[in-house]
Amino acid sequence: MEKPLFSILIPTWNNLAFLKLCIESLRRNSTYHHEFLIHVNDGSDGTLQWVQEQGLKYRHSAKNIGVCYALNGLRPLVTTDYVLFLNDDMYVCPGWDHALWEEIRSLPDNCFFLSSTLIQPRPFFCKSVIAPADYGQSVETFDEERLLREFATLPHGDWQGATWPPNIVHRDIWDLVGGYSVEYSPGMYSDPDFSAKLYHAGVRYFKGVDRSRVYHFEARSTHRIIKNDGSTQFLRKWGITSASFMRDVLHRGQPWGEAEDNQKLLQHDLFRSRWKTVLTVFRDTKVQPIWP
Image 1 (cartoon, rainbow, N blue to C red):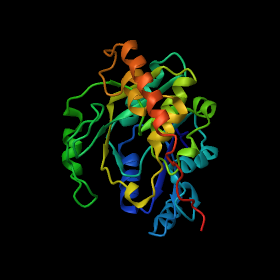
Image 2: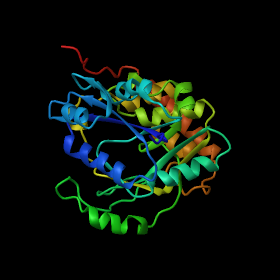
Image 3: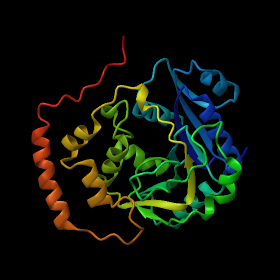
Image 4: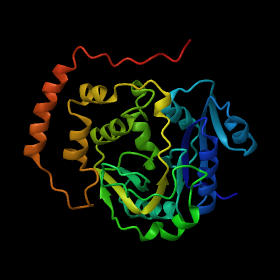
């Protein structure tokens, strides 16, 4: 049997229709063979049974344990050198993995963090995403044929500041920083925190790969959870706001190779962040426990 190239980690929470479409796109549109590792939260909608019937490698929790625990729990199942995080409401376009692999092979070492370029139906604040580009906001309204015909023609380009999924890192780097930080459970702001951990571990190559394109339905499940106050947690942990870190340090969304370091702006934002930290001293960042 062909050895898998990437280990694709997919947390899912009673989102079976999207998960089926996601796996179908991976099987149909991938250039290489990969292993799919699924964490099934709850699964009472038929997800658990379907994953078992498909013969996929998985872990299961009776309740939703959040994205951080889910991803870290899948790490022992990884058999490849590359750990890729993918949301269950994403549809990968043809050649998505070939573009990532070409980028990885061009690099001198494993000290990198790469993201695919998202295509989203609704307007979005960050220039790293191609939006709005509406090919459907549900499985029922998904215009797959038109997406496959047009996805490669949508203008964009490589960009700076890899952070959110789909993202890929070498497993040695994943292990070096300890995966995703569970104190952010159920997961708000765990993405920028992971990038910050990589940065502090010495990673400086944060790149969004234009030719690796993935359609994101934005089928948010966050309305079903009690959110952690991730922005305050990030500020207290790193001494800088998430927005300032992304803008001043990683330059997320800026064209690749064009953003210039602005130390004056960074120092200004660090000063403002210190004051914001003081103002959060009485803010409670606790979330509801998952136990009864």
